[in-house]
Length: 263
Length: 248
Image (cartoon, rainbow over all chains, first blue to last red; front, side, top):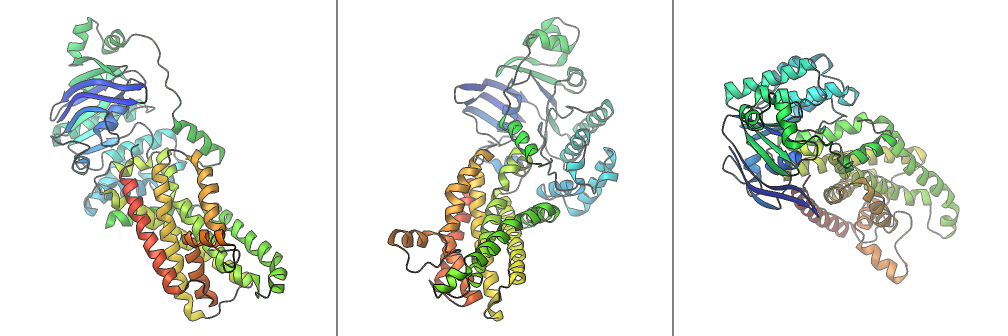
């Protein structure tokens, strides 16, 4: 379903993704793990037509995200790591806009929106502007929105960041359900190793832009002769803490706050 | 079609919901209108040009539409920083539709803002020469709005962050405004200035608007209209090209 070969992305001198190759098979749940700044999000951007690779090839369902970006966009859905909601619109309007963008027929759209908002316990607040929501509620809304249409591939970039165990559980139940009943291929990143261990069939570990290990959770544990995936992960990537430079987005948020732009 | 419609609707919803912003953005035109309108009035009168308030009001309406449409178009910058842009960019819809929805939304917002200022002008004492020409005035407002919303989108597609905003403001938007003849008549200007003003698309917008509202034309309505349509088409074309090239 996803074929990546010798993929490289450079920003000036800095190499964010350094010659990686992997494959995600149709209908599987694939976890892409790595410390902060390892190159996960950059890779997802290249897979989802948002950024051009410096070199190397990507194939999504046999198509090139750069050459046939429109066709590729028809095939996937995504829950971003960073917020991507419109704070001035209500929860319902955000869902509706998404439904129209993804060509979900009106009747299905209305039903699915209610169903998902209820599932993630946002239905009562559906007519409130999103900027009034708490962090957790916004996150839940993003996930509900990501599940509104049924794509062939679902990208989840750290979807459970900052969520309580109840919502996390709800999310993974939904994702597994989509995977089993609709055959949706899932590509996810997370920092919670227990989640990856539980839902993913195969895992790739990326560090400093390179893939350091690939295989099933079981294989990774055997390979490093550790009992848990967390320990295996630490054995593979070391225990140094990584810093990410403040992105321009963070700087902008500061700026926005300064000017009373509440989002 | 429905994609263009929902994105247009989004811009409108955001506009209607930002009431403080609506009121705040009326402050500047009101200041220009009252302070300049009454302050320069006596001098203008002595120069034999009639009432300055009557002269400057169409210019202030055009200014409002200019600022509002460029800023709405550049709302793209905020959407880029706050992530919503990505939501529309990964969607399986042609980017030209996303661009058109946004730009038409921005233009509509600018029209509303222009109409509000027009009402303020009437309250302050501005009077139209011939009410039958009002539809023509609306048409010119719409043309100005479309043209500069497209410019705003084009700029928003290229700029990476809000730091460039001041640059655009000082070296593009303000010159466009000051060279448009919104504040002073364009006839009998020194050589270089008269050439530069002819290159300013807003000059044709102001002239068209003033002709419709006051009946005195510099370039002629046909010329005004065709220049605006042509430049607007060009900017829409450039804007949609730049928008299609956005990487996040």
